[in-house]
Image 1: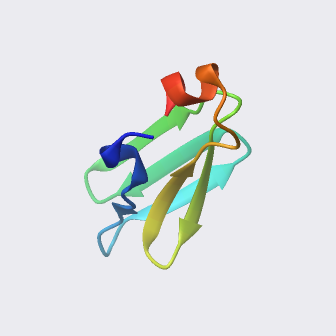
Image 2: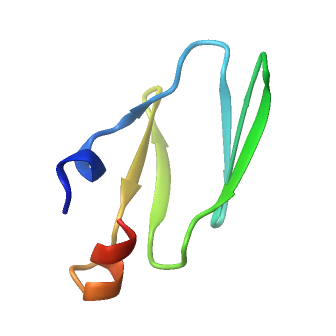
Length: 65
């Protein structure tokens, strides 16, 4: 796993995140962004951070993370 991939992504105050399956939507005062995450990767919202997790150490999962 890359060092950057291990770090949580901080979500500033005033920004809302919505995670629905593989779709992640981030909405803030300047607009919104949406991203569809590749199948083996999952995104979790925990304590004001977004955590990107891969389920295993297969080559495809490592390449996407």
